[in-house]
Amino acid sequence: MITNSLSKQRLLKLLNNFESELIERTVSTNDTDKYGQVICAFSNDLHNYAQNGILLIGVKDNGELSGFKATDKFLQNLGGLRSDGNILPQPILSVKAFSFEKGDVVVIEIMPSPFPPVRYKGKTWIRVGPRKAVASEMEERVLIERRSANVSMFDMRPCMESSLKDLDLDLFLNFYLPKAIDKSLLKKDKREIKEQLAALRFYNTKYDRPTNAGILLFGKNSEYFIPGSYIQYVKFNGQSVSDDVLNEKKFSGSLIEILEKVESFIDDAVIEQRPVPTSTLREKIKKNYPNWALRELMMNAVMHRDYESNAPIKFYQFDDHILISNAGGLYGKARPENFPDENDYRNPTLAEAMKVLGYVNRFNRGIARVREELAENGNADAVFDFKKMTSFSVIVKKCETSEEREQIAPYILGKTLEEFGISSEEIRNKFGKTSVDILEILLSEPQSTATEIAGMIKLTARTVEKNISKLKAAGIIKRIGSNKTGSWLILKH
Image (cartoon, rainbow, N blue to C red; front, side, top):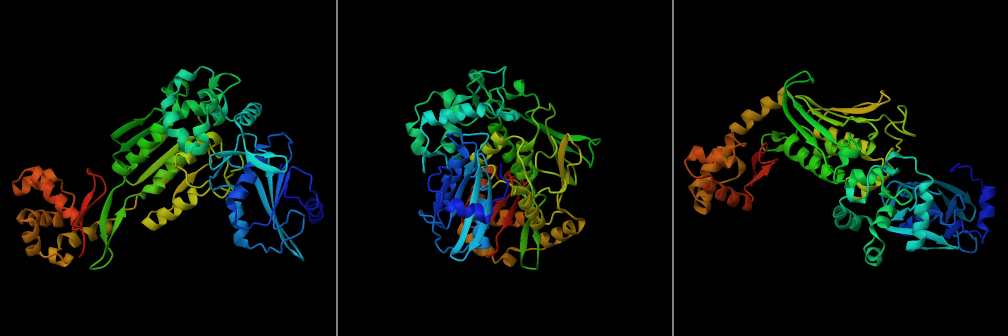
C-alpha cells in the first residue's frame, strides 16, 4: 500500500541499491512518456513482487544526484499523471520531493494494480529485469489471469447468464478496440476475440462469460441482464413530478449507443439559445443550460451509478430546473466532507471505457468544470444531494429571468438592417428582393422556419431555403441552436 512514509534515510539506501527491479532512476525532467511507461510497468507487477515500485527523478544511474531543483509546477504535473487518462485503469501512486545539498530528488511510489493489465497510451508496459518493455500476448495473459482473483467490482464480475453471442462483436472490434489499443500493436494482435475482450476487462476467461461491463457496453440486449441499465427522460409542465408530462423518452441499448443518443438529445432538445443584448451594439448568446455542464453531469451519473439497482437514471426536466439522479451514493474514498475534491470509482472498467470513448477528458476534474461552466453562463451553482446512501442527485437551475425576457423583445424588434451594418440595396442587388424580405422577417421573428417564412412572403419553402443558404454562405446570418428550437442570428458587419 501507499504510505507516504519514505524517509531521507531510506531514500539514501535506495539511491545506492542498483540490483532491485523495483527501482528506476532518471535525470530526465520533461519526459512524461517515460514516467508514464514506468508507472504503467510497476502497476502491472508482472513478476508478482507485491511491492511498490519506485521512480527516482533527479538521480543518475550510478546513484549520484543530478543537481535538479523541483518546482511546485513540476510536482503538480507529476500528480496529474494519475488523472490525465493516459494510464488506464488509474494508477495508485504518491509523489514526494526530498532536498539535498547536491540537488532534489522526486520520488514517485507506485502500488501494484489490483486490476491489470494497465496501459499507457494503449500499450501494456512491464518490468523485464531493470528495464521496461511492452508486454507480449503471453505476458498479458498472465496479468489477466491474476486479475480474476481480485475481482470484486460489479462491472468486472462475470455475467453468468450471458455468453459471447450476447455481445455486439462488430461494435467492439471496429469501433472500440481501435480507440483503446495502440495501432501498431493492434495490427500484430492475432488473439481470439475472447482474449481481446478479456485484456480490456470485458470477458472473464475463467468462467467463459462476458463481464457486466462487457454486457453494459456491447450487449445486444443489456437491459435483459441488467434491468436498470437505461435512462428515463421526462419533461414536466411545471416544477414538480405531479405536473402534467409534456414528453417522455427512454434511452436504452448498449451504453455506447445510449451515450451518443443522450449527448445529441441534450444539444437538440434540451438546450435553448437566444441573443441577449449587452449594450446598444453588442449582444451575446445566452443558453438555458450550458451544454457541456449537462453532458458532464449525465456522464457522471452513467459512470458512477450502482448497476445492481433496478432503478434507471432519472433525467427530469422542469420549467425552472433539471434533476439528474442515479442509484448509488458516494463511493469509496469520496465522503460528504471531501466531495468533490476526492473521487473514487464504483465502476472502474466503465470509467476507463468512457475515457477511451472521449466522454471523459480528465478524471476528477468534471465537477469543478461544471461549476465554471454554470457560472460563466449565468446559472446558479449546481445543488448536489448525496445525503442518501442509496442515491445521488444534482439539480441545475435554468438560466432565465423576467428581466432578460423584457430586454430581448424591444431590442430585437427595434432593429433595422442598417443598424447591423447591412445595406438593403446591396442585398437586393447581390441576392435579390426575396433575401431582403427574409432578413426583414428575421429581424422581428428570429425563430421563424423556412416554411413559416414562405407562407409570409407567398413563395415556396424551397425558394426560401435557397435564399437562406446564400445568406449563410455570405456570413450574413447563422443558425443558433437546433432546427426545432433555435433562432436565426443576423451578424453585424
